Length: 299
Image (cartoon, rainbow, N blue to C red; front, side, top):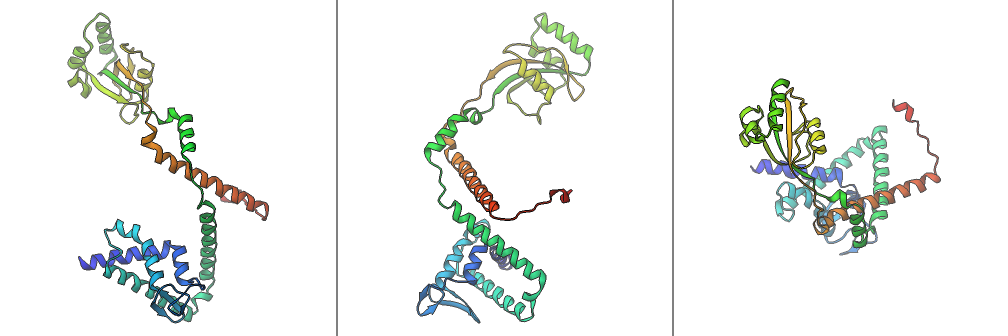
């Protein structure tokens, strides 16, 4: 079990090293203006050093907090001594391997330089985006206006209560249809003749909402056109059976109260606002750059 947990910790740290670009950048290139305990370039007492690379306890604790979401997913505690020690070991290991790679000339290889340049571009773009959207908030007024303008979208689906009779042949369906028109009980005929599983309930499907996975398109097309209490004509289903349906009741969808979806609307509007801000940034940048895109080459 201990070995398994160790593997999980390493996996979390590896994800951190690969995905936390801005955090790693701050570790490898600490703020030079920070001076604490007479050690330049780090925050807090010196925790570890590899040649010219240093990390202070304050720096490490900040970086450790960025690991918390990943650690929680694996039921790990970022404040646990063993976890912190393993994280520090992995950071030092990464720096040692990086130093060794440089000594062997890996940093001069074209593919590595291209990857580093790509990383640099990504990091710069991410930093600019983060700075652009950091103060973009959504007000309660914006949320209320959006809700008011899109009330239909926030309605729960319409529910219909339907009874059905399904039989194997057109002739049997016609015979049953005539008997229904002559006043025989729909539910009784369904329980006696229907081949559908709903026959046990007299053909009653209960209250259902539109779902083509549950019922085929023609079924919904017929039901939608019916008035309450109306019986359909005979139609053929995708299962080759012949159907007669009766609409017992129809419940209009109810609007979801704003209080229940307010934060979800806020999240969506914030994403939309941020995306528009980024698009504006890109469009402005295009005006000052030479951009050539040959999309035809993608075909």
